[in-house]
Length: 230
Image (cartoon, rainbow, N blue to C red; front, side, top):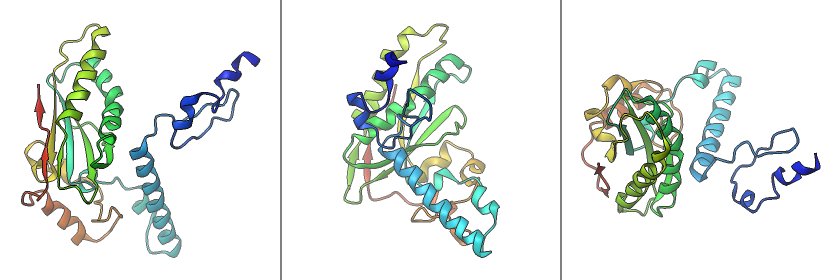
């Protein structure tokens, strides 16, 4: 047992950089959330706060458990997205590999000083994954080209060890919420409960209507660069 002491969390220098350590109860204690980044920690904290608010409303009789458990509409939360798409749909080996590496894109985007939050939508839609982006308020223009190219290069360097891969071609590009209707079915954009303008869950049908209308909103004032196709 003594030989396992070096595995106990807190002894390695890298452990100091973990954002939200939650330790396993058995020896040797390990951090079960070592992959949590700045963005994912922020998302978790935000969702827990909203869940608490909903639970308080349930306690008061102003809401139901359905309000707490209903699926949220990811695309209503952000105005900016990075889309990742494989060229071949029937490419399970590369699909699994790419999905396991998407968190690396989050880490790359977080290092961009203009990005406040980067969140992956865990649900793949038509061979596409989407990362929602929130920018800092003072950001007027942002170039994502280097970030996207860095991720694509990293994937190509790592994929050389895979076998039985039909293709490693993929598209990684930036898109605004107003342009999602061009690449996603309307039913996917409307599914679930919509976030309010502040990210807080709201029941009002008018809020949902407003969010749906925003899918076709005019071009935003921000100028975002970084559409990259291989």
